[in-house]
Amino acid sequence: MSDTIKYLLDEGQIPKTWYNIQADLPKPAPAVLHPGTHQPIGPSDLAPLFPMELIMQEVSTEREIDIPEPVRQVYRQWRPSPLYRARRLEAVLKTPAKIYYKYEGVSPSGSHKPNTAIPQAFYNREAGVKRLVTETGAGQWGSSLAFAGCVFDLAVQVFMVRVSYNQKPYRRALMETYGATCIASPSDQTQSGRAILAQRADHPGSLGIAISEAVEIAAQRDDTKYALGSVLNHVLMHQTIIGQEAMIQMEMAGDFPDVIVGCTGGGSNFAGIVFPFLGAQLRGGRKVRIVAVEPAACPSLTRGQYAYDFGDTAHLTPLTKMHTLGSTFTPPGFHAGGLRYHGMAPLVSHLLELGLIEATAYHQIACFDAGVQFARAEGIVPAPEANHAVRGAINEAIRCREEGKSQTILFNLCGHGHFDMQAYIDYFSGNLKDIKYDEAELAMALAGLPSMKEAA
Ligand SMILES: *Cc1c(COP(=O)(O)O)cnc(C)c1O
Image (cartoon, rainbow, N blue to C red; front, side, top):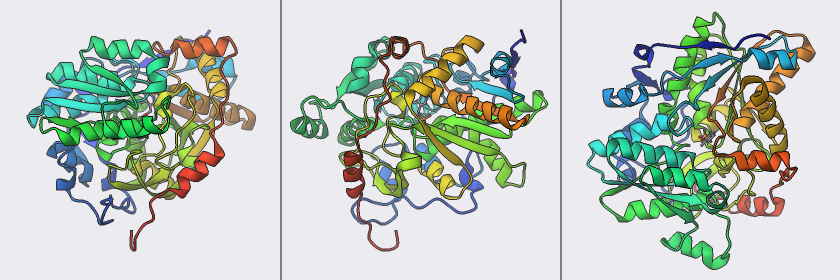
């Protein structure tokens, strides 16, 4: 039996800056456009929703952005997070590959999400904001922002996608434990929610709908701002603390990844581990293969169109160019609720277009097969979302075995599955099904993409 090896850093090694990949892109990402005029938006267009510090981060091309000391203080509770060498998994797989994983499940809410929830709450508090409103899929973002609201004394209201609200009562209880209010979406509390319910009273909800509800509330109230847990540039940037730490830890291990694997919902944990390595490559460093893994039932990168689209269903947000399944697309209710978003982060989409990353999609049973194999070898039960990264990493390790290659694989284990055991119960009882999205609905959602005027 080979032992697990753990690479730990000191608190003093928590990075002092976030890394902004926009400084190193060979070609800038397409502009964000106003939904009415189709002209590029300016910072003031976003001011009703976000505090100015976050808006400036969103558009910044500075390579390094200082992490405020109060944010680093909070990060200290669980950062630097450990990097492990999965020796027992390697043995089970009989692979010549070396498998490393960065574990983000050590945060208070059990995922990478507090890495951005904490700074977002901090900047809002500094700007005098009293309440934050947001959406959540599986509940990881809602519980992370609820925790951040406790730390910086902000009230937090969460619209939770109805299918997850029903599937995951413990996540809801966690948000309420942190003092947040949690509402099933679509709800009767907003115009966008009521419009959806009028069409279909038992609508399961989607992240796109929940975003509309949260944005609508934030736009109406002066003391309230909106917070998004993924997709936006500043959110991805906050997550780069993961990859920066991992770079130091890989150096401690005397190793360097040939391939990095991450799961992609909106793209933030993937960007978090990948961007610092990719940035080094873009500045002339070593080349790394990068694989994004998404659910086959909501395949924005592998099946979506690269086009301008809305971030939400009610079309309240600006237009961003991204890989999208169409803003009206409702993915089926599979268990990785955090991966049920119709679009992909513009920066991740742009990197796929530039050929700097690869994307692949798997169905959920194959992902749970991998997650259970991982748990039995390494002891950590991954979140259903993270199982996609585990599947991707194991497949790379199997490829290495078949090709007789000893490569180094690094993946992001972005959260634990302790609140998702119902999904594992369904898996063991044979009730987990590989759900196909509705092709007709996808075609309709894609046909409904906004038609763009010149130049965009
Ligand atoms: C939210 C979440 C995701 C999906 O979001 P990304 O922005 O793509 O990271 C994936 N895994 C876990 C554990 C999550 O909480």
